[in-house]
Image 1 (cartoon, rainbow, N blue to C red):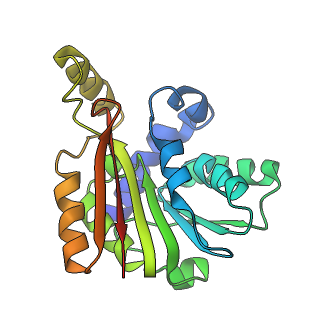
Image 2 (cartoon, one colour):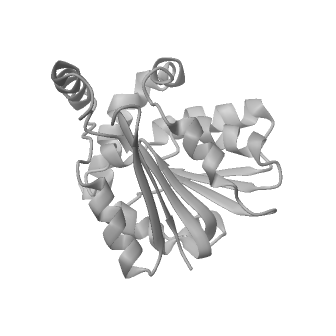
Length: 217
């Protein structure tokens, strides 16, 4: 079994049943997702790609907030894409949201989605679930069009919260193959420098989460 298919099998195993209650349960602790969507601000008629789109919750909210944008999403889990397809269809946004199965660490957006580069690309709490997350970041920046932006929100290190809280959260997240990336900011800074971009990066909610944007020239 290849690494890609192995990762897909792990994700499918986790979400085969959880996908039915995913949005209901995650709304209480995936903080900062709406902050990221509010900051996207794609140009009129622009394209937006979410990598690790899950149930398409973020794509649907983004489509409603930016009615002239075209939305795209990839996810490695076929199980999650079942829920995503159903939610997009139910929302009446099938004409504006295109989904495909793809590996964040190695995808060719052109053949997969019909668009090679995007005005906005984002990760929302997916990098902490991708074993090769740094490769995924590098892949993502290559999918950003000139003048476009890469947005990320994910778990922080809870440095300003009680120690017991951080330990308990990380132990609980580990049960779902989730690992907060302590050096996310450094990795994004390196990418920004390599691509002559500008980085904005901050901790939010007492370092419960971290949010960053790379703007390309």
